[in-house]
Image 1 (cartoon, rainbow, N blue to C red):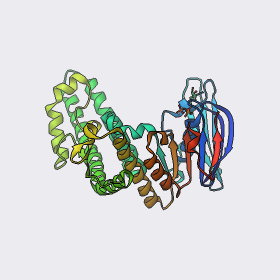
Image 2: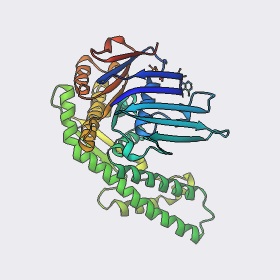
Image 3: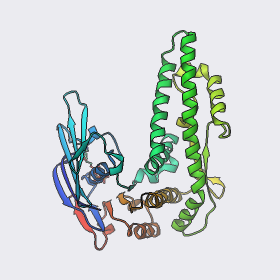
Length: 351
Ligand SMILES: Nc1ncnc2c1ncn2[C@@H]1O[C@H](COP(=O)(O)OP(=O)(O)OP(=O)(O)O)[C@@H](O)[C@H]1O
């Protein structure tokens, strides 16, 4: 449970201090008054990273020292950000007299964030959908988080090699082949984990969708790999070798998890083509509720819910269902519309 937030030079806030409600807090104010900034500060203190940019961006303009102080379960935690002359950042996370440069995994508390961009994900780019799925899997599974980092590093190294190729010497070709092998192995781990996750939770997503939509709707979700998932490693290796000329010309790896996507269908038709905007939002809400359920099961704690102005995106029925779900968690909600205030909540105005 979080109980108090203090900020120093964080985004639009020079000095700010507030209590947080035991059950819930509603942050009300017009656009651009710093509501999301407060959610972001809480998120950073609990998870160690921001959900919308680098920690350097979070430091108040023209300042060199920022602090987030959050009381959680009667234990204070402090995040200090220091900007050096060359605009580099040093971070310090302090919990119970122990300080570290990153937030230790054991101190990352479960948080589920609902934000309007996620609700619009179905109609957005494959890159954003991949990031969404990777974010979801990384929050649920520390091993996936590590595998994703390894994959991203491998991809970067391989692309560097493609960009800086000498006149295809044998030494360079051997070097690239070694990276091809590393790449397909790492790619296989990621693609298999993503496909497995979607396959495992397809039925649960269908149920969550039905409860939000108020009616049974045939719902499927399918991972779209660059090559067949059976024999993925070898097929990807063959594909890369066939695309060598294209890759050398562009300097980019032509296939693999960094190009893959997933497809959600309603009534056996791609949601991106047939679903209404409301239905697309309902699909994404089903994903967020799944995350909430899985985080609760895996951590044995009820996650804190942060909601950034999502009620304005929903109709009255879905808003009510979502309100009922969040009743069982501590939550912090932002809204521009004072009508979304709820009984028993602490109200913070940013006006
Ligand atoms: N590093 C920073 N230093 C100073 N001010 C900043 C910094 N980053 C963002 N801001 C300011 O914070 C304000 C935006 O805050 P925020 O996104 O929290 O608003 P909001 O109330 O959530 O708005 P909306 O309702 O439109 O989503 C803007 O005025 C922006 O200029």
